Image 1 (cartoon, each protein chain N blue to C red):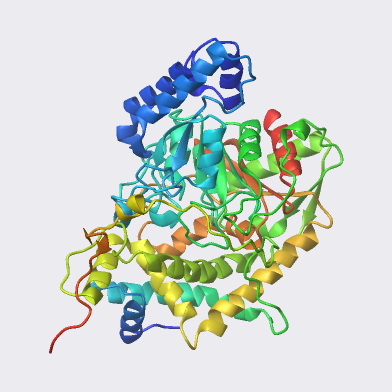
Image 2 (image 1 turned 60 degrees about the horizontal axis):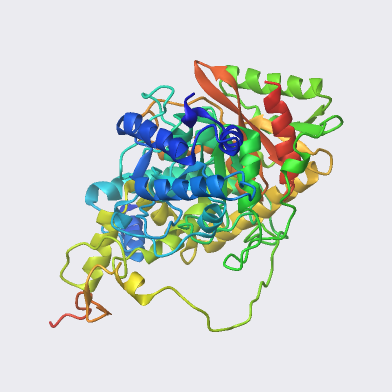
Length: 97
Length: 475
């Protein structure tokens, strides 16, 4: 599978990465090489094989839904890059045209 | 006596006999850090004061109480910087978490604190544990203490360097595809990755959640076993942890006569350093001389493990990395609107390898490609797990090289991701299957350490550490 520049731009958009023109070319080349390498999985017939999502063997681990002590808000809010009156501030979402 | 050069066991015995104090022991590690770390770059953060306060507590206990001293009490330890220690900076080797201070303790840290260890600080690592050499760290590469022109191996690079250069008596790392075993092999240490589900991942900064596991870097197998006994067990904060036998030390000196050790032929490939191969075969002979039976076995799907790994891991990475958006914590880039904030924060805050894996993961999960890549890789993952289960019907353990080569030069593989990924070719299949494995220093080749890898049955850490310990004593 060879990726072109348009596909790389689409992926960067999905992943919310503002990659440069030089990176577009580099990533197209490097991701294509990696994808070509993983193509070898197609040598195996997996038609009747169940996908394996995790390996510990644990299934449906449940706990009672109870209110418990959690982290202090003060500590968690102390990490926020831009805080005003205990609210997280971000740039505007909508622009006026 | 240079206290920082002791093993956990030796230091513990001396502390009991009051030959030196816990403060002196911690101080000797801190001195070692001061003397070497500017060059070696093993630590991102050193928490000197806290370590000394903990050591003083242990000294008070030794002086006053008649209670027995726990084996890890007062032992100085280094922690990989993707494991949360409350109130301490936790960067995961990334710019995006440059200013992040952990708000709680990981379960493994809670347990280490309970056991009385003196936490020296947080160690350098490949950014978000993505790398095999330590070179993707935003804070510069750690250097191999045996030859500073070479990589220490990654991603737990700083943890390996700290133990190998006697800046700490042991260290915690994490292992998603070899990140504990590879640096252990390159730096001449024991690197132990237990079964997936045996140690809690709560409070570990996630890379690929179905592969990640906490591991131990230590000077001896017995030391690794003591630490494992403290850390293993069920945790209500990690639903993948399983109930299992965690008593290791009591059987670690058992005779290994009659144990069946398999040599999987797929791990002896072309392009492998012949010196490395020779060392592994020498270890097989040692095991025979100890009464074990060594047999040739086959894991026919081994050659597909790396491909499975480099589909599933980037997929999980792209999902786990979505939380770094500059809103609630970490680095935030200047911007005019919200979308631009996301784009610039992630572009400027995340390094090249991390962004490459996010892109790859986004691709294999995207509509139209999901079945062809992600589902296909999950299916082959099951086949690989079955491959291991089948071979373990006939043998107790497997013996392989940890890596096809010894430590390579800094910069040598940095610009070619696929070549870098191949350094993990012998370690990733273990995480794909979720079984335990340990890298044991087995000698030198080209003047650098060679590690051999012992692989065990799922949740049979006891046999793995028993055989590793007996082999270690006879090298």
